[in-house]
Image 1: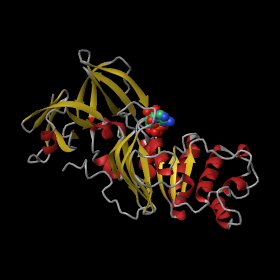
Image 2 (image 1 turned 90 degrees about the horizontal axis):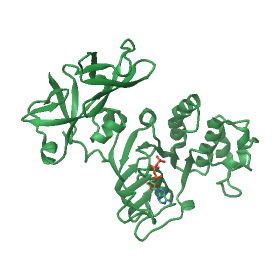
Image 3 (image 1 turned 90 degrees about the vertical axis):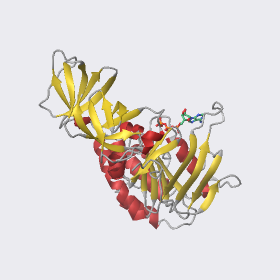
Image 4 (image 1 turned 180 degrees about the horizontal axis):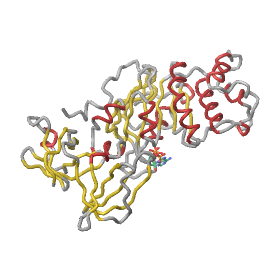
Length: 376
Ligand code: ATP
């Protein structure tokens, strides 16, 4: 069953902490028709952590700025907890939206101690006990008198998180908050984030470049491309059924093989596939006759056989620790293969590629399941 349309955040409820409807945005100095966002719909449910993935320049930060109120939509609405804060006739200033932000570069006040930073957004005379509780929750107790330059990168980012949550904000916008941290600190902080948000009852939108990071900690992952969402679903759904070929390639690092349809068979340079189950009607593919058909094949669905007269060639490989990731040129296209460590092949090696018998793949457009039935 094709899932592309239904995959875009179906459960959108009026009272959700964040509801974005039909958002269009274009920067004033951009060329006519150069929209950053084109009719984007997205919602965050209470307590939900949604990851926002997409290639560089696709509009991830712009979307956060629209929600926070630093940009205005050309069309569409932004609602926070059921209240419209941006729309045709409505505008609420950023400081009145009740949204916390955390940036890649921490954006702490260098002249204020940790305590001053975390209390910055609080009104004079307001109860400070939540600020103290947040410092403790984030493991910063005892560091209240330190200035930002006296803290480690991980501690600074924890402080930025505490500051964003201190005024009682229940919506957080996180713009690549872990990307300046070293691997160990990044992994620790990212694994703690869901518990911190849950403890505070906050919902968050997390911008990241890293599909693995998004899938590791987010309830849902939204994939932005050309100003709209290709898919927004749970990490499991994203892996099992990428809605578009782009999602399969960008998020899952899958291979896209050009395919030609002959009856219920799909011919590719590396093998013949059949729709599965055989009676499955490829309506989406039929409806898109002008669109190129492609099969999405996982990097571990292929084998490599060294052969002097082979018409494929090893371009290079990366060591993944537990396996190799090879790149192999095969005529006009190249594919990625994950192979065990004992498959030790040098760059330049002539070879043949073979799809594993019975290998499953997905046909696009339509995300239809197919199965390999014959070698090329
Ligand atoms: P990255 O992953 O590289 O941070 P992004 O997905 O966050 O990118 P944005 O920063 O939202 O992308 O930018 C989206 C597009 O809008 C880009 O083409 C960018 O050049 C353009 N853009 C961003 N800010 C402005 C601005 N102030 N004026 C004009 N164009 C802008």
